[in-house]
Image 1 (tube, rainbow, N blue to C red):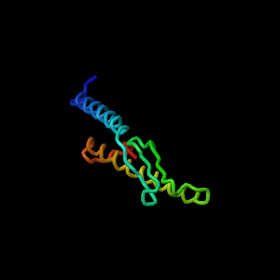
Image 2 (image 1 turned 60 degrees about the vertical axis):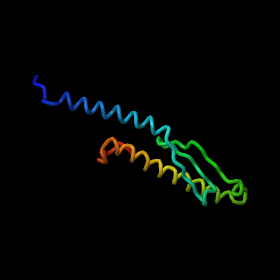
Image 3 (image 1 turned 30 degrees about the vertical axis):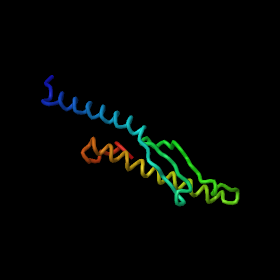
Image 4 (image 1 turned 135 degrees about the vertical axis):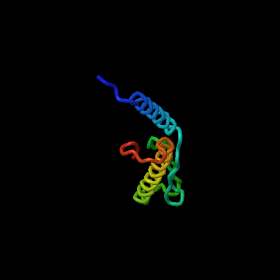
Length: 107
């Protein structure tokens, strides 16, 4: 069975990239972004692994009468935070891939 020239080097490069991706994923767990809505009345913190890590709500928007508005603000703040987390994760992965988009690598 003949070996394919350069296959060992290609395998080594793939393993190196996999190790660097794992390191970036680990680092993203410690990086956060803030999302907000209502001029900062609702703020959330999301890490680079898309986990919601904190929620802050200004007391003035907490009332039974304004429940619907608070729910809308919370939803908007979380969506803002998740968008920013995706952008941060994409930017970190772009450092690894040189900006080349690899399908399935990141959302």
